[in-house]
Image (cartoon, rainbow, N blue to C red; front, side, top):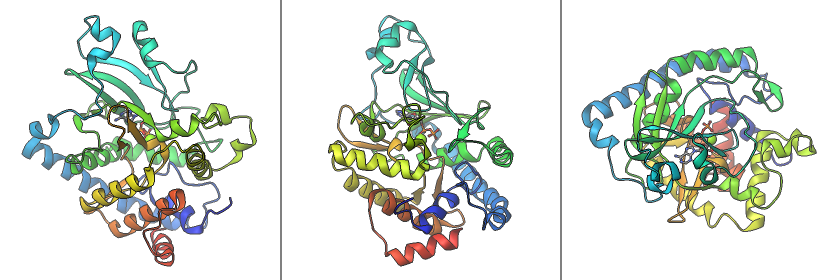
Length: 342
Ligand SMILES: Nc1ncnc2c1ncn2[C@@H]1O[C@H](COP(=O)(O)OP(=O)(O)O)[C@@H](O)[C@H]1O
Ligand SMILES: [Mg+2]
């Protein structure tokens, strides 16, 4: 666990008020306190994000959802089946747990598929779709897959039940949608394009490019779950593995100036009242056209109108400091913050 600070360990917990997906094993001492507060904050968090999404869409729904495409959007014609005339809305490919895509139409396989073996997703379902002439990501919010493992262990029943309850109330969908709407003027965030409350799904721009995690894997070192299984690295915690990915990226000099970019993106998001909490290399995509970095995956984020906004900011800083050595805060201050959150 070299270098993992106490505040950092606690950070991972408080990122998930309203969900317990990443509660580290061994986290027991403060558990009851955490769960006591969980329900209250979960509802307050849900009410804020839901109200925000509803009001943004009722005031300017069409405008918000139909802005210009991203600079790194994928052109539909570059996909073989679309070029061949299949222009109707449909699912083009499924994205697996490691971020690899698998085509639905066999003629698209050479375009989408970089890996043979599909690793089923543990939680949400993510697909690449054609929606009204745009290539989008469809993210369907779901509970843990049957048989899903977390840090090599089955998901505890309690975590599964909690995820199920909050998910059925739409907490994760509304959280991500609210963040995408708050950040809709930022060029490095995919635009929200549609919400499907029946299927519990959102649609956003597909960014053509490679995640920084995929960049780390290009070094040839084992990064993906399937490659780690059976090696001694399989015993490392999720956070230790994430730090290792950053070292690999640094070692290969493959990430560009990602620290400066992430720091600047964070500042702009904070200015708009968003504190991203699920910060890891897999959630940054380097655009294939512009070479610019995009930030994705805001299911776990704190917005300024929710309780614990200040704590969320401290948590964000702790994570940035621990993962990227991006120290924007006084160490003692941020440590104190994380203790308070937990
Ligand atoms: N807007 C997007 N553009 C391109 N790929 C995306 C986009 N959103 C998600 N992905 C791909 O899908 C994967 C999973 O999406 P993510 O939102 O991170 O889901 P989860 O919350 O389950 O981690 C990402 O790692 C990335 O490979
Ligand atoms: Mg992700």
